[in-house]
Image (cartoon, rainbow, N blue to C red; front, side, top):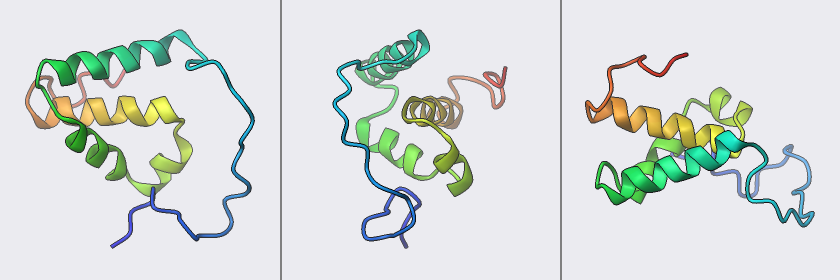
Amino acid sequence: MARINDVGGVEGFGPVDTADDSEPFHADWEARVFGLMNALRAQGVFNLNEFRDAIESMPPGEYLAASYYERWFAAIRTLLERKGVIEPGELDD
């Protein structure tokens, strides 16, 4: 069963933007999410396969509406809740 992230060969998503974007982050919060993911992974809270699966398991509408780092943050929240590190809904605000 294909997940929403598997769009290989699917038409209707428009052209891929190949413009050279030398900035790794476009907002401070993106850098913090990047650092948070790496810190949690380094501490063994989750691994990269779990992280990837959490992103790919997002509901299709949420996945398509989210930016790259919004997907990362959603995956972090999902994994922290799933593993009992935080209570469900604790990061809703």
